[in-house]
Amino acid sequence: MGPSIPLLLWLLLSWSCSLQGQYPDYMAYLERQLATLEERMAQCQDQTSRHAAELRDFKNKMLPLLDVAEKEREALRIEADSISGRVDSLEREVDYLESQNPTLPCVEVDEKGTGVGPGNKSKGRRNEKYDMMTDCGYTISQVRSMKILKRFGGPTGLWTKDPLGPTEKIFVLDGTHNDTVFIFPRPRDFTLARTARKAIRVRVPFPWKGTGQLVYGGFLYYARRPPGGPGGGDKLENTLQLIKFHLANRTVVDSSVFPAEGLIPPYGLTADTYIDLAADEEGLWAVYATQEDDRHLCLAKLDPHTLGTEQQWDTPCPRENAEAAFVICGTLYVVYNTRPASRARIQCSFDASGTLSPERAALPYFPRRYGAHASLRYNPREQQLYAWDDGYQILYKLEMKKKEEEI
Image (cartoon, rainbow, N blue to C red; front, side):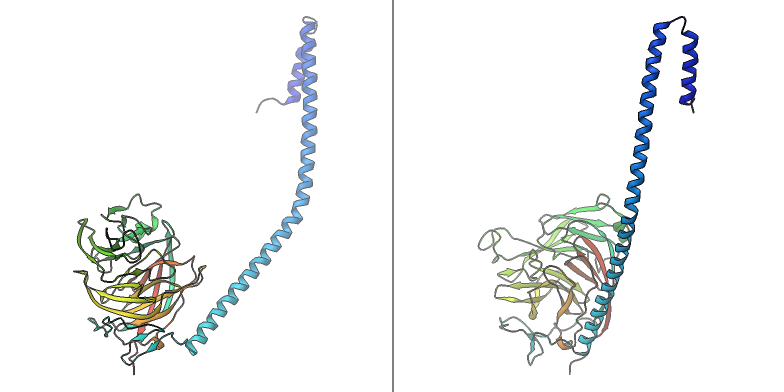
C-alpha cells in the first residue's frame, strides 16, 4: 500500500515551503492545484456520504418488502403443495372409482368376439382371430413409473432400442421429415451427450414421414411417399411405401407399397404420421387408418422379411384425440390425450387374438409429463416404453398381469 493522502499533502506542503523562496510562480501554481485537489476531495466525501445515506434509506425500505415477498412466496408454495396433494388424492379416488365401476367401452362385441364400433362397417377385411405364435399371455396392469433421461432435438421424434439387437445401442430419429439416424453405443452415452456430434450418423436414401419408424432386427422400417402416386402430390389418396433399410450395410433391402388406399393419419393429435409401425413378442405390426372409415384405427400384422401383410383388422378404437399406440402380446393399446395436452391415458385396447375382452382391459393413466407423446415404442425384453414427449426422452416402466380368458 502506498502513502496515505494526508501524508502526501504534508510532503507537498513541506516541499512547497522549502521551494517557496526560490520559485514563487511555481509555488503559486502548486497551491492552486492543492486547493483544487482539496475541493474535489471534499466533493467526493460529500457524494460518498450522500450515497451511503441513500443506500441506508433504500435498504430500510427494501427489507420490509423482502420480508413480505418471502412470506407471500412461502404461502404460495404451501398452497401449491396443497393443490398438488389434492389433485393426487382426486386422481387416486377417480382411479379407485373407475376400478370399482369400470368405464363401459365405446364398442359392441359381436358373436365372434371382435369389437365393432358405432358405425363401423365391415370392409371385407380378414378380421379373423389371430393365432398367437408365442406363449405370450399378459397385458398391462398399470404404468408403474417414469424416468426422464434428457431433452434432445425438437418437439417431435422417436428414440428406441432394437428389441432383437445384441447391443445396447440407442437409435434417435429427430423430426417428422428427416433422413439421418443418430446411433449412440449405450444409453449412458446418449444421456451424457450434449449434442449429436459424437453419435454415429446413418443417412437413409429416402426421408421418412412422421414418427412411425421402427428399428427391428438390425433394420430400420419406415414409410415414405412413393413418387408419382395416384392423384399426384401429397394428397391423402396416395399410398405409402414401406422401406426396409439395413442399418449396418446402409442399403435398402426391400420395399413394398402398403396395401391400403386413401390413408389418413391414424392419430387425431399426430397429424404427420400415416403409418405407425410397432413390434412386440409376436413380431411386426402396423397401425393406420383410411378414408373408408375415418373414425377408427386399423391394425395389420406384417411379415418383417417380405413386408407383406398377413392379417388386417378393423378395430373399435377411435381416431379422435388419439396421440400414439403400441402393441403388446398381440394387443393394440391406444393412448389418448386432449388439446391442449393434459394427462394421457390408455382408453382403448384391441386384442387381435380375442383373448382379452375390452371390458376387462385396464385403462391406466400415464404419469405427469411435459406435453403430448409424439411416439411410443415398446421393448418386449425390458417391458418398457420409449417415449418422445415435447423433445424429452422418457422411459415408462410397465407392470403386467396375465390375460383373463373370456367366458
